[in-house]
Length: 253
Ligand SMILES: Nc1ncnc2c1ncn2[C@@H]1O[C@H](COP(=O)(O)OP(=O)(O)OP(=O)(O)O)[C@@H](O)[C@H]1O
Ligand SMILES: [Mg+2]
Image (cartoon, rainbow, N blue to C red; front, side, top):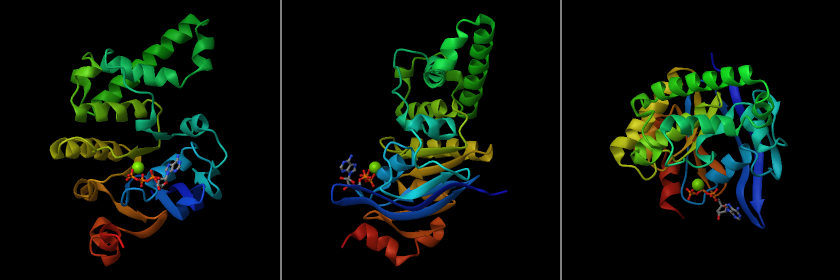
């Protein structure tokens, strides 16, 4: 059953005179992998940051789960289950993989956890629940055998998967990923997307910016193509690659 998770309606964001995002409307429905591609500087990251509450849109409205989130703070949007895994605080290379997962969860529990320090039983129960959740996420990503390895010893691809894992600690319904396969070799890039596809089968939804089109297009169900702040082409990957306008965007003016 597909429902609209994220609705971006006529959203613009400018920096001085430059429209980084210029009247973008798009829908992200549940249960799929949605791609966002486009040349450097076309506005992809700015659109993500606007959705995540890091920038306020100059025009337009953003809805998540049917609720207007345009004026919410980033931590409020995070708490609703709209999470950018790569914007969490950096990994601690000297801590174990498991501890990095737990730190990610605690960092966002804030006052509630502090209060419960005075209620030792409930605190211990919460810690145990978090540990269970962390192990479950590591299993999903096939990283459980590395739970007690130092994060600093992971390969580039494993580190990316761990960052996705840390995002899972928020129990998100929609994960935004900005270039998950950047800087890793093609085989690992594919392995990262296979991990993403496994999570999608478990019910998660993804909105992914990626320059490695040859990988993204094998996994995405729908692709939005951005150029100069606007969505100029959209469709299934196999339709997009047949569209001359798609090549025009990459060939430039
Ligand atoms: N904080 C900022 N202040 C001023 N201008 C910005 C800021 N962030 C982005 N821009 C400008 O907005 C435009 C879009 O940038 P953005 O980073 O969103 O592009 P992008 O599609 O993510 O590019 P890339 O593929 O290289 O990551 C660019 O012209 C950029 O210089
Ligand atoms: Mg970017």
